[in-house]
Image 1 (tube, rainbow, N blue to C red):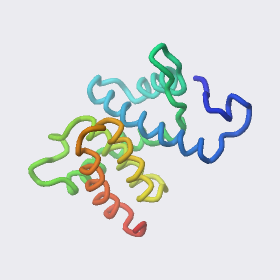
Image 2 (cartoon, rainbow, N blue to C red):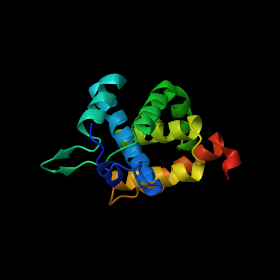
Image 3 (cartoon, one colour):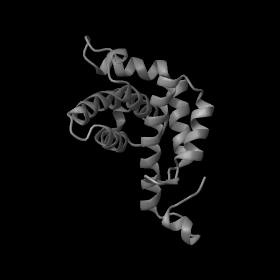
Image 4 (cartoon, rainbow, N blue to C red):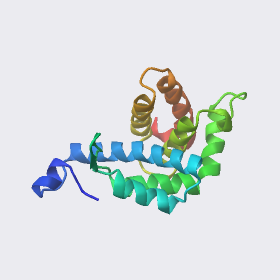
Amino acid sequence: MTDNTPAAKSGAKPSNAEKKQMRSAARLYAVQALFQMEVSGQTIKAICREFEVHRFGATYDEGEFAEGDVTHFRTLVDHAVNFQALIDQMTDRALVAKWPIDRIDPVLRALFRAAGAELTQMPTPPKVAITEFVDVAKAFFPEGKESKFVNAVLDHMAHEAKPEGF
């Protein structure tokens, strides 16, 4: 795995802005990894290795992948898997009764699991987590209304998980 941040290329420590960008990329990669795990049936170990080796900072003919914060990525994926039942129950409470989590788009399901992991198991302020994962939704659904849906569901989840954050 290659660190392609400007700081790494120059030998310096990443700046705060670069660290933030790397955490943002880690969130996007976590959603992709959780989606891939669900549709392919691959193990968490295999998926994490694939992403860390072939995605983080990789350069291909099609372009360059952003460098991600490996620790943040691993923590999100690990918590999303280990606390999936808790996160899915919380997500179900945020969804309308006729649309339980198993009926929603698998990309959104992966997103809610990654966001739920960050909201319930990590010290990230809830407003930061919501904003970051709404941005992830916009990356996957640039033309749709999904980002507004994601914002509403995550807001409900965040108020349940971290009411003190509001």
